[in-house]
Length: 143
Image 1 (cartoon, rainbow, N blue to C red):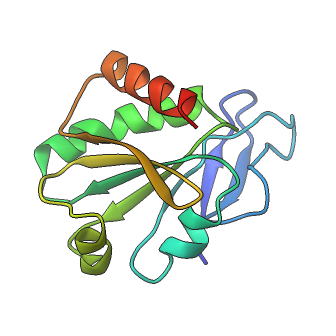
Image 2: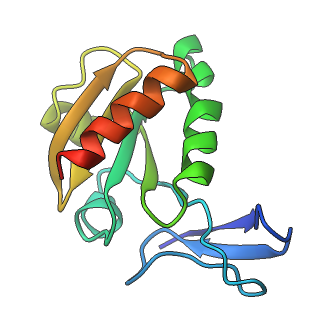
Image 3: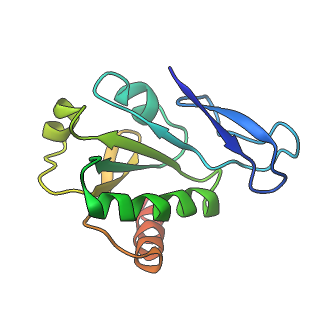
């Protein structure tokens, strides 16, 4: 399982964030919750998403997709705002055909909020931060 190095938004310390973990990532220096943004694919989806201890926002995207590139910084910001409460999992649809088929991805970007591996809400298309925040708040309230 891969990991990613992320700077703590509170103190700036660099931390290694695993793709899957028993809890949620916290800064080694100041103990603040860290944004949890990782990648998953056909082979790692179960460990990264279905076993997550917090709700997962899955981003089904592709490198060549302009709207997908617009949504990415919005998701990064939401991961920071909701640190410790959500996990953002990016799924490249070109590299993960089984997941694309499983979740019937026909248009990208497609975002889904998952709880225990079950999709509880879905958003198709690019949207601004305010719309995404309202969508995410509604999905989290329903869990």
